[in-house]
Amino acid sequence: MHILITGGAGFIGSHLCDRLLEDGHNVVVLDNLVTGSLDNIAHITQDKNFRFINQNVAEYIDLQDPVDAVMHFASPASPSQTAPNGYLQLPIQTLKAGALGTLNALGVAKKYNSIFMLASTSEVYGDPLVHPQTEDYWGNVNPIGPRSVYDEAKRFAEALTMAYHRTHNVKTRIVRIFNTYGPRMAIDDGRVVPNFICQALRNDPLTIYGDGSQTRSFCYVSDLIDGIILLLNSDITSPTNIGNPHEITILEFAQTINRLINNPAGTILENNRTQGDPEQRKPNITKANQMLSWHPKVKLEKGLAETISFFKNQLDD
Image (tube, rainbow, N blue to C red; front, side, top):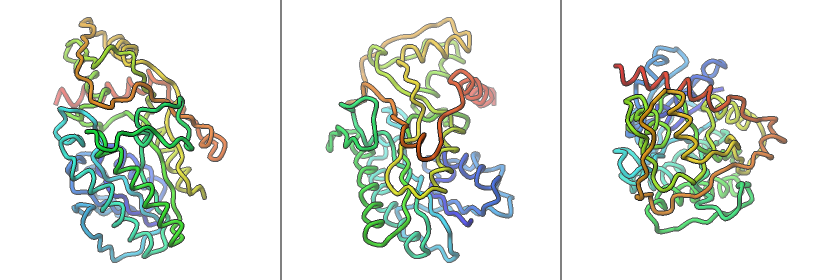
């Protein structure tokens, strides 16, 4: 297959490139490197089946060569209030990536009769009133809160994708991604995994926003990529959750990282949680399990060990 990946120089996008190239596909990456990095794809730039285009997805995509699939993964994703490239710092760019970017990527898919995959998010469920979250739950989202620039961009992107499916018969795939972690996350990403690991490696106390009782479910990146590939090759046109249903409190997560790194500094609590930060996050993966025969395989501690090793090398450099 010939595949276009928007946001392919990002954390998840670059791992997706690796897998697709390993499987023998031709890959074109379109990325303006606002949140992605050339370091993530440096090892594949000389591959004869790989091409990189430095472009903002919100601009018209003039792709001359036909593609069999378009995978739209371009968007800021970090909810951190301090991350320089998080969606709270890039609100307009985030909305454009979700709206104009999705429209442009869908235009390519329509032109070449390609499969179109949208990288959506568990954030479409907002601060959920249903637990765990199933694909038929419509969500509890504040449409004008600070997090809305990401949440509503993805919800609009899903609506636009399904409109193209119904109106133009575009072959759609929508993956709702839950918290994913692994190598190539940015040190300054601002999300909980790099924050905790880097603080622990420096023997600093881990900063928990709130009382630590809020829960998350962490999926290792290789498991996510497995699910994405299975979904791409399926005929499921509606949204599908891909995530790890193992739920853990943020306090327990911090304690696990401190134990793995032998950090004696413990944790500290701060009260400045982002407005709208969800209390619970856990995917119901019955659909993925039954229709794709997919389930996560990497245990949390194994995945964290790989991720800790990556960050240790980054800090040593």
